[in-house]
Image 1 (cartoon, rainbow, N blue to C red):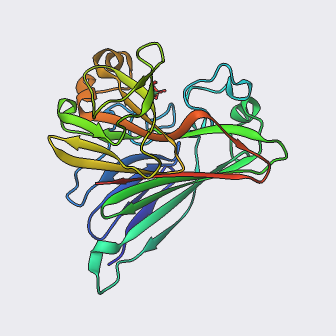
Image 2: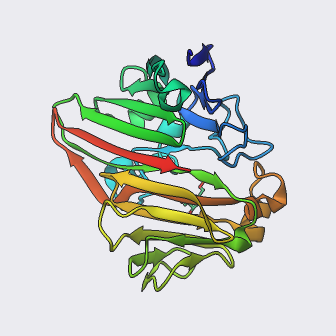
Length: 299
Ligand code: TA6
Protein backbone atom coordinates (compact mmCIF):
# COMPACT_ATOMS: atom_id res chain seq x y z
CA UNK A 1 0.00 0.00 0.00
CA UNK A 2 1.19 3.53 -0.80
CA UNK A 3 2.03 6.41 1.51
CA UNK A 4 -0.46 9.13 0.57
CA UNK A 5 1.32 12.45 0.02
CA UNK A 6 0.09 15.91 -0.96
CA UNK A 7 1.98 19.15 -1.41
CA UNK A 8 1.04 22.68 -2.41
CA UNK A 9 2.81 26.00 -2.08
CA UNK A 10 1.91 26.40 1.59
CA UNK A 11 1.91 22.96 3.14
CA UNK A 12 2.92 19.33 2.81
CA UNK A 13 1.02 16.39 4.27
CA UNK A 14 1.41 12.64 4.34
CA UNK A 15 -0.71 9.69 5.47
CA UNK A 16 0.74 6.25 6.11
CA UNK A 17 -1.15 3.13 4.97
CA UNK A 18 -1.88 2.41 8.66
CA UNK A 19 -3.56 5.85 8.96
CA UNK A 20 -1.04 8.00 10.86
CA UNK A 21 -0.60 11.48 9.37
CA UNK A 22 1.56 14.56 9.55
CA UNK A 23 1.05 18.08 8.16
CA UNK A 24 3.84 20.63 7.80
CA UNK A 25 3.44 24.32 6.98
CA UNK A 26 6.21 25.59 4.70
CA UNK A 27 6.13 28.72 6.86
CA UNK A 28 8.67 27.95 9.54
CA UNK A 29 8.71 24.29 8.41
CA UNK A 30 6.22 24.08 11.29
CA UNK A 31 4.64 20.70 11.99
CA UNK A 32 1.02 21.69 12.65
CA UNK A 33 -0.57 18.25 12.93
CA UNK A 34 0.48 14.72 13.85
CA UNK A 35 -2.31 12.14 14.17
CA UNK A 36 -2.24 8.52 15.26
CA UNK A 37 -3.86 5.70 13.29
CA UNK A 38 -7.22 6.46 14.93
CA UNK A 39 -7.04 10.13 13.90
CA UNK A 40 -6.25 11.42 17.40
CA UNK A 41 -4.24 14.66 17.26
CA UNK A 42 -1.01 14.32 19.27
CA UNK A 43 0.09 17.96 19.12
CA UNK A 44 -1.62 21.03 20.56
CA UNK A 45 -2.42 23.86 18.15
CA UNK A 46 -4.17 27.05 19.18
CA UNK A 47 -7.63 27.48 17.63
CA UNK A 48 -6.44 30.89 16.38
CA UNK A 49 -2.88 30.02 15.46
CA UNK A 50 -1.81 32.13 12.49
CA UNK A 51 -1.18 29.77 9.56
CA UNK A 52 -0.88 32.53 6.95
CA UNK A 53 2.73 33.49 7.64
CA UNK A 54 1.81 36.64 9.55
CA UNK A 55 3.47 35.35 12.72
CA UNK A 56 5.01 32.22 14.21
CA UNK A 57 2.52 29.37 14.70
CA UNK A 58 1.15 29.06 18.25
CA UNK A 59 1.43 25.31 18.68
CA UNK A 60 2.61 22.29 16.73
CA UNK A 61 6.43 22.23 16.56
CA UNK A 62 7.88 25.70 15.90
CA UNK A 63 11.59 25.49 15.04
CA UNK A 64 13.84 27.78 17.08
CA UNK A 65 17.07 28.86 15.32
CA UNK A 66 19.62 30.54 15.51
CA UNK A 67 18.76 31.85 19.00
CA UNK A 68 16.54 30.59 21.85
CA UNK A 69 14.48 33.42 23.28
CA UNK A 70 16.52 36.61 23.15
CA UNK A 71 20.24 36.94 23.88
CA UNK A 72 20.88 40.65 24.56
CA UNK A 73 24.46 39.91 25.65
CA UNK A 74 25.27 37.92 22.51
CA UNK A 75 26.19 40.54 19.93
CA UNK A 76 25.70 38.40 16.83
CA UNK A 77 22.11 37.42 17.67
CA UNK A 78 21.05 40.26 19.97
CA UNK A 79 19.08 41.99 17.20
CA UNK A 80 17.11 38.91 16.12
CA UNK A 81 13.46 38.40 17.05
CA UNK A 82 12.78 36.11 20.01
CA UNK A 83 13.49 32.48 19.04
CA UNK A 84 15.20 33.57 15.82
CA UNK A 85 13.99 33.71 12.22
CA UNK A 86 13.59 29.99 11.30
CA UNK A 87 9.99 29.74 12.56
CA UNK A 88 9.10 33.04 10.85
CA UNK A 89 10.48 32.26 7.42
CA UNK A 90 9.15 30.28 4.46
CA UNK A 91 11.19 27.09 3.93
CA UNK A 92 11.43 25.25 0.63
CA UNK A 93 10.10 21.71 0.32
CA UNK A 94 13.11 19.71 -0.87
CA UNK A 95 11.37 16.36 -1.31
CA UNK A 96 10.39 13.16 0.35
CA UNK A 97 11.54 9.63 0.73
CA UNK A 98 9.24 6.93 1.91
CA UNK A 99 9.76 3.31 2.63
CA UNK A 100 6.64 1.56 1.42
CA UNK A 101 5.36 -1.25 3.55
CA UNK A 102 6.63 -4.53 2.19
CA UNK A 103 3.96 -7.10 1.25
CA UNK A 104 5.17 -9.48 3.95
CA UNK A 105 4.97 -7.07 6.89
CA UNK A 106 2.00 -5.04 5.60
CA UNK A 107 1.31 -1.47 6.64
CA UNK A 108 3.16 -1.63 9.96
CA UNK A 109 6.58 -0.57 8.67
CA UNK A 110 5.85 2.20 6.21
CA UNK A 111 7.46 5.55 6.92
CA UNK A 112 7.95 8.87 5.19
CA UNK A 113 10.64 11.50 5.55
CA UNK A 114 9.89 15.07 4.40
CA UNK A 115 12.85 17.41 3.86
CA UNK A 116 12.72 21.21 4.07
CA UNK A 117 15.47 23.71 3.27
CA UNK A 118 16.42 27.21 4.36
CA UNK A 119 19.65 29.02 3.52
CA UNK A 120 21.12 32.49 3.48
CA UNK A 121 20.24 32.42 -0.22
CA UNK A 122 16.52 32.03 0.51
CA UNK A 123 16.41 34.06 3.73
CA UNK A 124 14.67 37.44 3.62
CA UNK A 125 16.91 40.52 3.45
CA UNK A 126 15.97 41.79 6.90
CA UNK A 127 17.01 38.55 8.62
CA UNK A 128 20.18 38.43 6.51
CA UNK A 129 21.02 41.94 7.60
CA UNK A 130 20.48 41.05 11.26
CA UNK A 131 22.45 37.78 10.99
CA UNK A 132 24.93 38.14 8.12
CA UNK A 133 26.24 34.56 7.94
CA UNK A 134 26.30 32.17 4.97
CA UNK A 135 24.55 28.98 6.06
CA UNK A 136 22.25 26.24 4.85
CA UNK A 137 19.84 24.18 6.91
CA UNK A 138 17.91 21.04 6.14
CA UNK A 139 15.02 20.16 8.46
CA UNK A 140 13.61 16.65 8.21
CA UNK A 141 10.25 15.42 9.52
CA UNK A 142 9.95 11.63 9.70
CA UNK A 143 6.65 9.84 10.35
CA UNK A 144 6.41 6.16 11.29
CA UNK A 145 3.42 4.25 12.69
CA UNK A 146 4.52 4.91 16.28
CA UNK A 147 6.76 7.98 16.16
CA UNK A 148 7.42 11.43 14.77
CA UNK A 149 11.01 12.54 14.30
CA UNK A 150 12.31 16.03 13.58
CA UNK A 151 15.94 16.83 12.92
CA UNK A 152 18.00 19.69 11.63
CA UNK A 153 21.38 19.82 9.89
CA UNK A 154 23.02 23.27 9.79
CA UNK A 155 26.13 23.91 7.70
CA UNK A 156 28.40 26.97 7.82
CA UNK A 157 28.88 27.67 4.10
CA UNK A 158 30.75 30.92 4.69
CA UNK A 159 34.26 31.94 5.64
CA UNK A 160 33.32 33.31 9.09
CA UNK A 161 32.60 31.16 12.13
CA UNK A 162 29.18 31.63 13.76
CA UNK A 163 27.43 30.48 16.92
CA UNK A 164 23.85 29.26 17.10
CA UNK A 165 21.23 27.67 19.31
CA UNK A 166 18.62 25.17 18.14
CA UNK A 167 15.39 24.01 19.80
CA UNK A 168 12.24 22.18 18.73
CA UNK A 169 9.41 23.95 20.52
CA UNK A 170 7.06 20.96 20.68
CA UNK A 171 3.52 21.49 22.01
CA UNK A 172 2.40 18.02 23.13
CA UNK A 173 -1.33 17.52 23.56
CA UNK A 174 -2.57 16.04 26.86
CA UNK A 175 -6.08 15.43 28.18
CA UNK A 176 -5.56 17.11 31.55
CA UNK A 177 -2.31 18.74 32.69
CA UNK A 178 -3.32 18.03 36.32
CA UNK A 179 -2.89 14.31 35.62
CA UNK A 180 0.49 14.68 33.91
CA UNK A 181 3.99 14.00 35.20
CA UNK A 182 7.29 14.07 33.33
CA UNK A 183 10.04 11.60 34.18
CA UNK A 184 13.60 11.24 32.92
CA UNK A 185 14.80 14.59 34.25
CA UNK A 186 15.20 13.53 37.88
CA UNK A 187 18.27 15.00 39.67
CA UNK A 188 18.80 17.41 36.75
CA UNK A 189 19.83 20.99 37.28
CA UNK A 190 17.46 23.51 35.75
CA UNK A 191 17.11 27.26 35.32
CA UNK A 192 13.75 28.34 36.70
CA UNK A 193 12.59 31.21 34.47
CA UNK A 194 9.56 31.90 36.64
CA UNK A 195 11.71 32.33 39.75
CA UNK A 196 14.41 34.82 38.83
CA UNK A 197 16.26 32.37 36.58
CA UNK A 198 17.56 30.67 39.70
CA UNK A 199 19.41 27.37 39.22
CA UNK A 200 17.61 24.51 40.99
CA UNK A 201 17.73 20.72 41.07
CA UNK A 202 14.83 18.48 40.07
CA UNK A 203 13.85 15.91 42.63
CA UNK A 204 11.42 13.26 41.45
CA UNK A 205 9.03 13.55 38.54
CA UNK A 206 7.97 16.97 37.21
CA UNK A 207 4.36 17.99 37.82
CA UNK A 208 2.76 21.19 36.50
CA UNK A 209 0.93 23.17 39.16
CA UNK A 210 1.40 26.71 37.84
CA UNK A 211 3.26 28.66 35.16
CA UNK A 212 6.31 26.53 34.40
CA UNK A 213 9.29 27.62 32.33
CA UNK A 214 12.46 25.61 32.98
CA UNK A 215 15.65 24.90 31.03
CA UNK A 216 16.92 21.48 32.14
CA UNK A 217 20.41 20.03 31.82
CA UNK A 218 19.47 16.33 31.85
CA UNK A 219 21.49 14.49 34.51
CA UNK A 220 20.87 11.04 33.15
CA UNK A 221 22.79 11.52 29.95
CA UNK A 222 21.84 12.02 26.34
CA UNK A 223 20.13 8.70 25.65
CA UNK A 224 17.66 8.80 28.60
CA UNK A 225 14.13 9.39 27.25
CA UNK A 226 12.02 12.21 28.66
CA UNK A 227 8.66 10.55 29.30
CA UNK A 228 5.26 12.23 29.59
CA UNK A 229 2.91 10.16 31.72
CA UNK A 230 -0.82 10.90 32.02
CA UNK A 231 -3.00 9.14 34.61
CA UNK A 232 -0.21 6.60 35.04
CA UNK A 233 0.03 5.78 31.32
CA UNK A 234 3.04 6.75 29.18
CA UNK A 235 1.71 9.00 26.41
CA UNK A 236 4.96 10.37 24.90
CA UNK A 237 8.61 9.40 25.06
CA UNK A 238 11.14 11.90 23.69
CA UNK A 239 14.60 10.68 22.72
CA UNK A 240 17.21 13.27 21.77
CA UNK A 241 20.18 13.03 19.43
CA UNK A 242 22.78 15.74 20.07
CA UNK A 243 20.22 18.07 21.64
CA UNK A 244 21.67 18.37 25.12
CA UNK A 245 18.99 20.44 26.87
CA UNK A 246 15.26 20.07 27.55
CA UNK A 247 12.87 22.97 28.16
CA UNK A 248 9.57 22.32 29.95
CA UNK A 249 6.95 25.04 29.54
CA UNK A 250 3.34 25.58 30.42
CA UNK A 251 1.95 29.15 30.34
CA UNK A 252 -0.85 28.43 32.87
CA UNK A 253 -3.80 30.84 33.19
CA UNK A 254 -2.30 34.34 33.14
CA UNK A 255 0.24 33.86 30.36
CA UNK A 256 -2.39 32.01 28.30
CA UNK A 257 -4.78 34.94 28.86
CA UNK A 258 -2.04 37.32 27.71
CA UNK A 259 -1.33 35.62 24.38
CA UNK A 260 -3.70 36.87 21.66
CA UNK A 261 -3.11 33.78 19.53
CA UNK A 262 -3.68 31.30 22.38
CA UNK A 263 -7.19 29.86 22.24
CA UNK A 264 -9.11 28.42 23.91
CA UNK A 265 -7.89 30.29 26.97
CA UNK A 266 -8.22 27.06 28.93
CA UNK A 267 -5.94 25.36 26.38
CA UNK A 268 -3.04 25.38 28.84
CA UNK A 269 -4.80 22.41 30.52
CA UNK A 270 -4.36 20.38 27.32
CA UNK A 271 -0.73 21.02 26.45
CA UNK A 272 2.77 20.67 27.76
CA UNK A 273 5.82 21.87 25.88
CA UNK A 274 8.72 19.43 26.14
CA UNK A 275 11.37 21.06 24.00
CA UNK A 276 14.55 19.30 22.93
CA UNK A 277 17.32 21.75 22.11
CA UNK A 278 20.86 22.97 22.52
CA UNK A 279 20.22 26.29 24.20
CA UNK A 280 22.53 26.53 27.20
CA UNK A 281 25.58 28.20 25.72
CA UNK A 282 26.29 28.31 22.01
CA UNK A 283 27.17 25.80 19.30
CA UNK A 284 30.11 27.24 17.35
CA UNK A 285 30.38 26.33 13.67
CA UNK A 286 33.68 26.93 11.89
CA UNK A 287 33.54 27.39 8.09
CA UNK A 288 32.36 24.09 6.48
CA UNK A 289 31.38 22.69 9.89
CA UNK A 290 28.02 21.00 10.23
CA UNK A 291 25.81 20.68 13.31
CA UNK A 292 23.00 18.15 13.50
CA UNK A 293 20.40 17.63 16.22
CA UNK A 294 17.23 15.57 16.27
CA UNK A 295 14.39 14.30 18.41
CA UNK A 296 12.16 11.24 18.10
CA UNK A 297 8.80 11.36 19.87
CA UNK A 298 7.29 7.91 20.34
CA UNK A 299 3.69 7.27 21.34
O1 TA6 B 1 9.14 27.59 25.75
C1 TA6 B 1 9.91 28.45 26.46
C2 TA6 B 1 9.68 29.89 26.03
O2 TA6 B 1 10.91 30.50 25.84
C3 TA6 B 1 8.84 30.61 27.09
O3 TA6 B 1 9.65 31.50 27.83
C4 TA6 B 1 7.76 31.32 26.27
O4 TA6 B 1 8.21 32.59 25.87
C5 TA6 B 1 7.61 30.35 25.10
O5 TA6 B 1 8.94 29.99 24.78
C6 TA6 B 1 6.81 30.88 23.95
O6 TA6 B 1 7.51 31.86 23.26
P1 TA6 B 1 6.75 32.58 22.01
O7 TA6 B 1 7.75 33.53 21.45
O8 TA6 B 1 6.38 31.49 21.04
O9 TA6 B 1 5.52 33.21 22.60
